[in-house]
Length: 154
Image 1: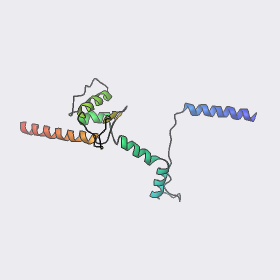
Image 2: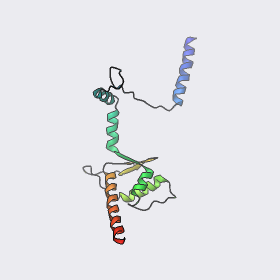
Image 3: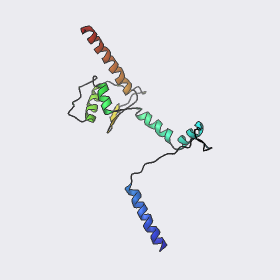
Image 4: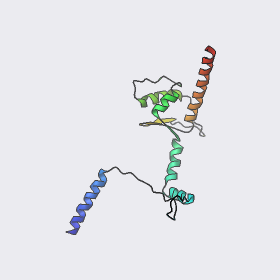
């Protein structure tokens, strides 16, 4: 019957949907006139707000506003702490290095925070507010120190 055929097709569709990995794509219409190379900024902003994109960006930025690839973190900040053990995986190297380098870090947020100043993901390291700036300042101080040593011994 028609109903059994519909039910079979619906079950097939539901199985296909459950087997797939869902990705959401937000389409932004640049203008209401449907003309090429015409941008209506207020209309785009309204669409982003109503789609929740701006709120999601604000939330993500509040928690971890900065991120870097693990390899970049090790390369850039290797002079700040214990020399990373190359036999360990990169995530462990980053964690060890940053725990040492950020041991005296105090959050610039009013009242401070007891949470870790960074989180190591699969491929990137995410820094809380002020942590990356603290590391950069410490790195610059170390580079200045090394410059003096090299100049003195030259």
